[in-house]
Length: 313
Image 1 (cartoon, rainbow, N blue to C red):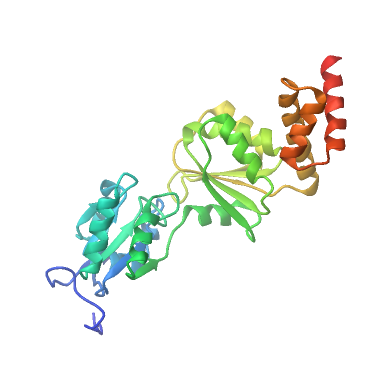
Image 2 (tube, rainbow, N blue to C red):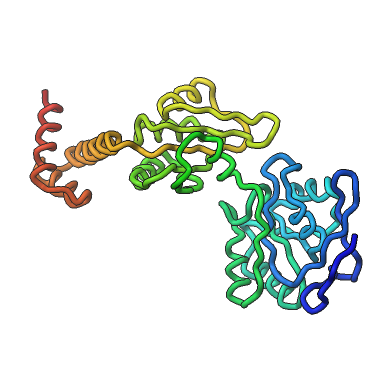
């Protein structure tokens, strides 16, 4: 394989040996890398989804920084890559980051990967990227698979605007509060969720967000990939009956219509008023809620009267 190598900017890995990887049963020579931190996207399930550029970087790097070295070892072994693995995960402290930054400063090329997909999306890699940037060191993205975008393009929900929330709080009260906070964001909402919490999360989402369209994408790109579509109440009922699924989960929730937003606003108002009326007079409850929601006191007081009357009937 003929290559043009610029020795001013590129270098061989430690030891000066040529690095190779195997694809389609053939060995390919990896192009030498310039010193720096390379943020490399890896497959989210199907090993065939890796790019040739990613394989070349993983093969030519001095080390691969992996969330779980056992997971990444499977990928590297599949493509005949023998680059040393170094653990870098959420429990890695500042001293570990300093050692990695020092290696780059001394002229090494390090490849940062997550267990699956694009690093820094719901994993701790951003701290290392920040540290490298602060030191003025090169940081190079090697794009590729992403569970977020993979789920979005098959969801059937609008793709022009979307908001990635990541994981919601594990407790129901905090989860509902956060759902209410992001309910007014214009665009498709995207969440990660642990399988064992999915039924409860969907129930909370249905309670807060109502009849919005939603999608549950499971095990994307893998053998048992499934895409469930419906309204939040429909999906909540399905998973309440079936129980928690297995595998990696991405949940997408469509934007509310104007009518839905109005209904959600009314539900939020009633919920706060009912809670306040348990410990305050009608007047005081209305004052507290109107201040919290920035609504006219007269309108909130009128609604508080209706709720209080209904409760006493």
